[in-house]
Amino acid sequence: MRVLLSLGSNRGDRMAFLRDAIERMTRHEAIEVTAVSGLYETEPVGVTGQDAYLNLAVSIETAMAPRKLLEALKSIEQAVGRTPGERWGPREIDLDIILCEDRVIEEEGLRVPHPSFRERRFVLAPLMELAPEAVDPVSGRTVADLANDATVQGTVERVAIAL
Image (cartoon, rainbow, N blue to C red):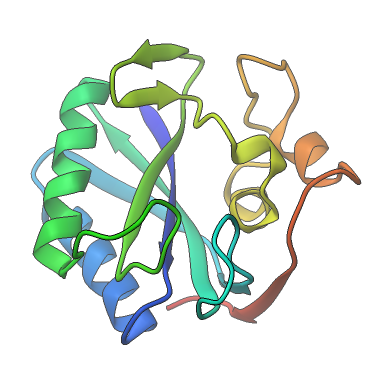
């Protein structure tokens, strides 16, 4: 099953945290990393007064159920060094499931598609590189269509082709 992830970091050595997370996904027995977007510097959303984020998108293939994948990603966040903090506050690493093929999941602690990805340029810009044709099963719109919507919030600047 193809899954699209969003990764972000705005505390400490942002690039090192992102690299470490991708490396750990690559080594995971049930995750195959198939593509990694370029790197974007983005303004924080939700909580002001924090450093800029580095964001990217990753496409993976996995046979894991979405709940098991979420558990694996949370374990990777911990291994990379994520420390507890306020919601939308600074973080060493953040790994989010954005799309999981055409699935719609509404469970405690797991919502797919990610509920706010449609409004966030820091998610959509990197996703555009990997999967412009991917369809949001809730809205029926492609990532390309969503990314080109004038109402999408935030500013992004592409800073590197790859890690």
